Image 1 (cartoon, rainbow, N blue to C red):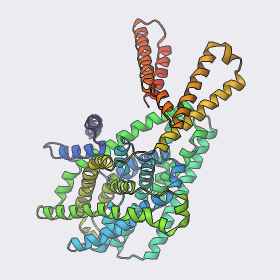
Image 2: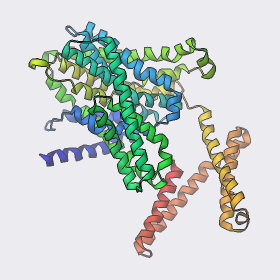
Image 3: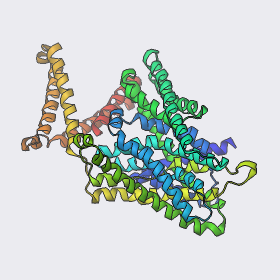
Image 4: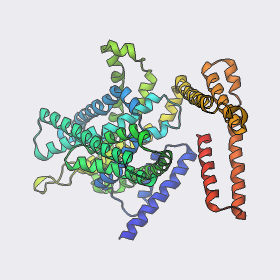
Length: 530
């Protein structure tokens, strides 16, 4: 049994790697291709049936994925855009759940409002992994990706809280709005408190104990599970615990991590997140045969009809929400009009269109119990599962595939100011080095060749960055050699790498020294290509 499960996991990881390479070739976001591939693989005769356990997603997959997203999110950007993020992560989730409740109640015979709120809570949170995997290949304003990533950090928590209250209302038949509101705040606030408390302990370990890069990396892998499980143990929001703890530790990471810890941790986390995301998305596709088998044959056509209508509704609801959310605060607040630029309608529309659903929705649907009290079957459970899957597939494929096309049609590009910021950072860093050389190594910088070359290098960097900031014809001419210069540097890396390989084959020097030089070349090539 263990061998069969292990073989299945290894096979999934291999298929994920192969399909991800194919998605790069086809220029398709890999979550979309993985879901479609999983869907096709699931109908191949002889393929073992796979059932995605909700506990597996909530405990194994969700904490590290949320932690990685929080770690890569800038707290300053998150706080700067807190209003649009909050409107999407809390306001839109409640608005979507309410709208879906009434739509499904009117559309599906016998479907109560409580069941509608349950379905709305399940399908309300978009999965920003799919959106950002598309947007990162395109030049779009940083504001869009910041808002989408910030929304994805919080909307899972708010949707799961709505799901929890709706499920309690169905199970007990008891629901009081003000009690639900108080419980909502308690669950959210205490989840954040627990996350921050554990984050401070982890920060103290990184800061004051004699850790190594391997130990630091291991602790970063353990931390999200501690935060999530501790919060859920006390029935608070594990999602917000992980998010708050991840944001805090990310903000303070420069104080506790050395350069080699950062290099090692980033490599480990990039691989882990890639594999976890890949397995989750392909398993979403593999889940469909199981879901269809749970449906009665005579209800499949009606289930498809209901699912398509609700899928379209989720897309329209989000677009309806984002435009008032972007412009109404400006109408009501003079301070916002004076301090913030008016959002471009194209960017607002792309934010609204980037509402692909993902694994949290499916895991929530699978978490719906099979029976109620006294062994009574949970009403419409199989239909809720099917609708959730279709919403995920519909939004991933339709919105995911059309998003790059829409961005090109609307001619959305990153503003020039974002590029200027990069040049300004380079200028400040180069000038800092030049000041250091002038103060501490003035004589060496004029007499020793190595120091002279270093000074000339940073002088050129400062001149190029400064000329780019001037935005005149001379600046454009002076920077025109940069692509060719970078190509030459990469060729120099390849020449040195070939020479290293020759020395390795001839066994001229110790392998340890050669591997160190190879690692240096790897870092240099990564810097040049990035």
